[in-house]
Length: 336
Image (cartoon, rainbow, N blue to C red; front, top):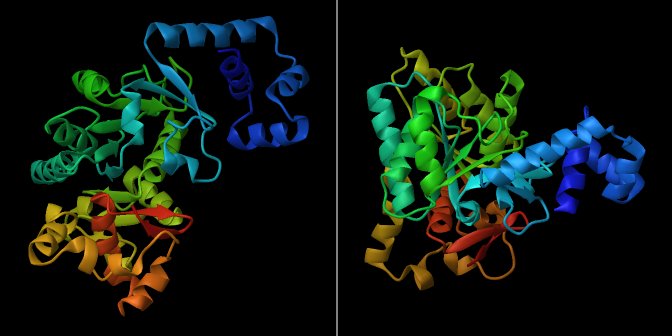
């Protein structure tokens, strides 16, 4: 408890985020030495202690990036949060996951499509990550929650993990609390502001190996999330739409530029494996699996080995990874 208090006292200090914290740690060697340097006043110390007491009362856990429960996706990106707060089922963070984003003003057809995709992932024991906004985010969370079992979805929040936003999603918040997890890097009780939503989008992109973009305007938070995912070398899928609908401009541009793979149904992720299993023994005869072992093999090398382009094998790699047959390691892939 004292170690976490020390970290929060540093991280809650004005002007100190992950980058500054790591620089201070390099300079002073330990949290205690940083605190001695900062010399915070008693009122500030009391405010952080009150936050921790509030978190305890609400069943909120703080998870440091040295904790094995910390999400691997976040851990593997630069300047990730030192500490996140989690409310709900912490074990959800250990599952394979897929991130889904899109506009708040989604069409009924668009939300139904996203809900069905999310439900299929959840039924395959893959947690669905989104931002609990109205529209596409809500459809993704609810689609996952419609599957059987718990630990089906993760909501990344822009404010404190206890702060419900938007208020229209209060019932969804408590459904996720019961059967999933809510996470944030912000202090407990904090009201979100505009910049926080950009950071939230960054973590939505980081936490999963795959991002699906539904309906989204060309200049939107969802497209910001897509750009983060591309920068992190994540696999990006986009749902195409009618060219005259502004809500299709974002995903259509991602597909046209080659930065995203077209997503037209859940078959893009799951049916291929089912078909292969029906035709042959996937564990022994799949051409990609044949080339993998315990030593990581990069996408480019794999593509060369199976005589295909990198873009041609990306979908196969996603399918195999989601099925738990392979995993990413050290910039390549190995057998599970």
